[in-house]
Length: 377
Image (cartoon, rainbow, N blue to C red; front, top):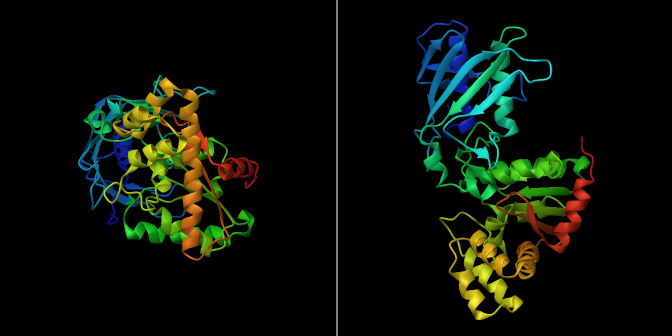
């Protein structure tokens, strides 16, 4: 196993493979399964991933169990049990061969029973399970995360419309520490590749967080332009300008990007917060009365503050969000210029807890439209 550990989708895939092996009648003693960890690289060799148990529950029905090990560092999934129940299904011509069901502790999209699952997680399951299935055979998986519902209350899942448990939104196998210098080095290397790609013509979208990385393509932003920044936003802005990026769009959750409006360019909460202070300052610049400023400053979160303001005056709340986006752009361009790089145009697009665009800076609106129109295959 890599020293940085594996993301939740890997442990789900491991338990699923163990369960399907039981369905196939393979030996009962098992402590690991071989997994292909990079679905888009079929030539890569499978890696052994530990599992705890697997058992046949009934003819055509089996259970696989794994336990999350995210490696070093703080991670709330550490030790989380993953149960995957697998059973054969007869696929109809109009249905997919793989069906996924959310059990207890698995996040679903609010108002539905649909799992919140990333494209990477689906591809990981597909590339590891499809070769194990007999020709024409379908498969149904029910995923359960005991304790996942409680753990989800300590995440921002609910802020993005995910309820009842943990979302399966990892976009790669290895855990990346958003405050880890190694993550910055990796992002720099990816940035250099994109900057050197003539097809991208000096354009880049710096995406903040997994939710942003999942949402951006759904909103029409071309995948080749997307680069996940983690919390190292400032160094990556400067590196982008140094590498010759001409137009850069910051795309992220308003509760995160708001820090840039206050000049905070390393956004990990262990290092700096100040979000409500930034919000209150911007509201004061708009001329909001003292009572509303006090309500904003005393809110539990940026979302709660803006929601309360919108209930009182939706137009003012919208104006404040737009001003925040503009401030993000201004402070970002000044940050880059302060480091001797002033040729790059920076735009900002913010989304809210419903995963909807809630604000665009002047440059952000123009860049969003321009980048959506690009055809990069």
